[in-house]
Picture (spheres, rainbow, N blue to C red):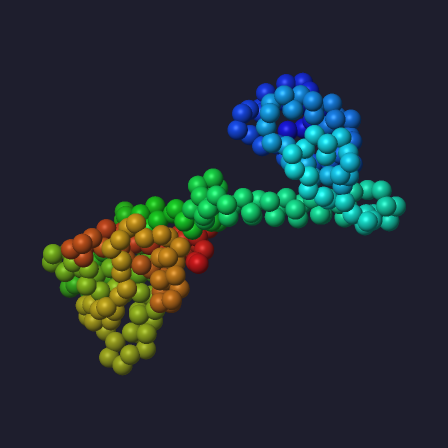
Length: 251
C-alpha cells in the first residue's frame, strides 16, 4: 500500500487482525506522517523499519526495527543504497521467521505458486503427462520388420510388446534395434520379441509425482516409462521429453 494512495481510499484495505509494516529510512516522509494518525484509529499493531528511532514513525510504532546505516554506498552519500540493501535483508529475515512460526512448508508455497518449478515438482503427476493414445503396441509374434514400421509411426523410439491377454511382456527400443543389427545372424524376419528387453522398467501408480518419475528415468538411463494397470496391461507411457518440455526437474 502506497502512503499517498492510502489517503485517497486505499486505507480501506486495512482491517481488524492486520499488522502494518511501515518502511521509511527517515521516518518523517510527509506522505507517511499524514496517514499515521488514521492508522492509529484502526488499533492494529504497527511495526516500523526506520533509521531514526526518534522519528514520527517510530513514535507511533509498537515495534521499531533499526535500519540506520553509517554511510550510503552512493558516492554522494545521498541515494539510498546501503540502507535499501539492509531493509531488504531485514525484510527477508522477517519473512523467514514468520514462515517458521507458521510452520509454512514447501506444499504451502507451491499451493500459491503452482505454475513455478516448485509447484510442478510437488503437484504434477504421471497421470497429468503420460500419453494414452496411439501407443506403439505390437503382439509377441510380430516380425521385426513390421515392428520397425510401428516404431517409426509411434515417434517414441520404442515398441511395447504384449501377449494374447494384452499383458505387457517386453520393450523394444531403438537402442535395442541398433545392437541387434550388430549381432551375427541378425534377421529382420524374426519376431521382434527376440531382440526386445524382457524385463523393462515400468510403473503402475499414476499418482507418482512427475519429478519422481524423472528420477526413475534418469537413474535407469532410459527414455520411456511404460505405465501399467494392476493386471500389467499398458495404460500409457511417459517419455522423458514430455517431462522436460513440461519443465519438470528431478529432486
